[in-house]
Image 1 (spheres, rainbow, N blue to C red):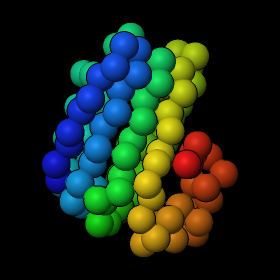
Image 2 (cartoon, rainbow, N blue to C red):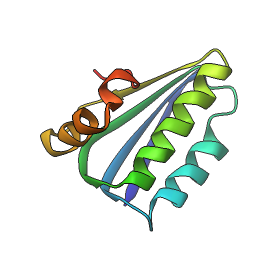
Image 3 (cartoon, rainbow, N blue to C red):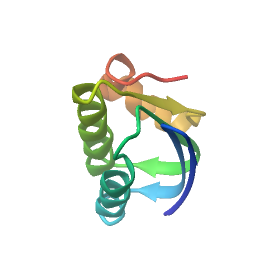
Image 4 (cartoon, rainbow, N blue to C red):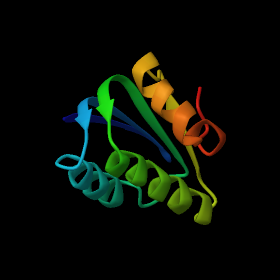
Length: 99
């Protein structure tokens, strides 16, 4: 998994590439936790995400809750069809702010 970050004021965009699974989800969680201090808008661009497992979904849910509790917002954008199917099946389409 590869993560590219672009910060613009209080907005942070993280582009995630590759697989978000049991092995890589802890890396993403640590990267998000260390990067969101002072961030009011987190944009996760997952255009190049090839796979997401339940542990990856857990990271997204945890991050969504964290942003909500800090009066911030998280946007997931450029969702590939294969990942959107997982979001549909798991009900994450109703939880996440997807653009």
